[in-house]
Amino acid sequence: MKLAEIAVSGAFTVTAEPILLGKPAVMTVKDAAGELVKGVEVFAAIEGVKDPISLGKTNTDEVLKVDAITDEVKKIALYAVKDGKYSFKVNTQTYPPLAGKTELKNVIATAVGDPYKSKGFTWMSSPLAEGKSAIIQYARKKDFDKKGEQELKLAAGASSDLVFSGEQDIKKNGIVRVNEVTLTKLQQGTTYVYRVGDGKNWTDLKEFTTLKRKQSFEFAVLGDTQSPSDLSLFDKILGDLNSKDMAFMIHVGDLIDDASKFKQWDDALNTLSRYDRIRSTNLVATLGNHEYMGDVNAQAARVIFNSTGNGPDLDKGGTYSVDYHNIHISVLGFTSDDKVLEQQLQWLKQDVKQSDKPWKILVTHKPPYFTNPFGGNEIMKEKLVPVVDELGIDIVFSGHDHSYGRTKKLKNGMDDPNGTVYIVSGTTGLKHYDAVADEKFEYVNMDNIAVSLRAKVDKDRITIKTVTSDGEVIDEFTVVNEDYKEK
Ligand SMILES: [Fe+2]
Ligand SMILES: [Fe+2]
Image 1: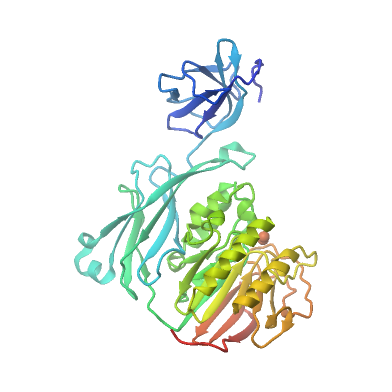
Image 2: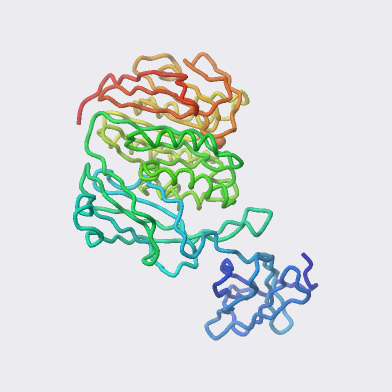
């Protein structure tokens, strides 16, 4: 793009909210002292347009509101001028909405709240939707079947708009609204009908069933997906899991490859959401390094997964814990910062010690015992293993290495009948890495396959079957909890 030559002295700073097509653009100008300034003229240099256009001057409220700079997706540069002084240019673009005005999509059930009495969902809609609210209508199925829509109750939540700007082709960037609602005061073991919407538009009615207290049940573990060009194996795995009665699903992180590209989210979430049972099963999501790719604070992932916020302040929604029946699950979000890891581990210690659940499971993106021939996770082994030993964690599920393997029961790196099984959960996508196994591993898969782990909990034992996307069982083992006490 060619911009008009202007003298730049940086006397002002222009701040513009992301400019959404179909909505007024709002901007402010500050002077060198950081004070908002009135009467500054703001110009926009629009890609493909010869001369910059004047957008007007900041008003007495020190704000400039412009109905429409352009009605096309364009690169633009904004700058401000007053009394011959200029601001630096702000390079941005105009963004299209990433969902149709009445569209509601990518509904998933989140790991939030007490699974006997509550149920959380997130979904996407247009930032230009006429209805401004995030709402779920729901009713007990048996009431709804008898009396119909009059039985539907209403629960409201919150929305926020996410900006995706990582695509080279700027037409694929844009803004989407993410909505979240958590239903509370539900009855356990009860089937509900529900639909999500904005007050004007609604999805079709679907069903979910709250959990009922049990000591025996099933769950699934999904490894890295990260397969932006082809989700067929992920789709196959989920299609198969959709027939199972799962209490919850764990995803160990790297659902997407580049978090700043909307299409990757849209495709992966759509694959989860298109299966009625999958979309209504709580997703215990983990932030992997790819949730941070193009998104410094993994903001998109945090908003979309909306996991419970009971973790440390420095990783809200990334590091957290949830209970399902007799299992306490702690999840540590990815970090490359040793200090953050240190604080996550401090939190983990008090989190697990406070739990009276007989099973203790930990989920981390990077595995402490790894199958990657290039290594790279030594810090996890050094820092995490002593804490896992101290806390008596039964199983650690991890990802990142895109191959499947599990260790023997280990304590301090040695075989120990009271030790922990460390599992690298394989891939649910196309990307498979070579694996090496040291003597700590009891099983490592070397084949280029996608897998899921299906766990059956039966009081003091958990049996895990590792199944390929073609339905072949490649590994099966049982972890026995020696000091199981029913709660
Ligand atoms: Fe990773
Ligand atoms: Fe990965």
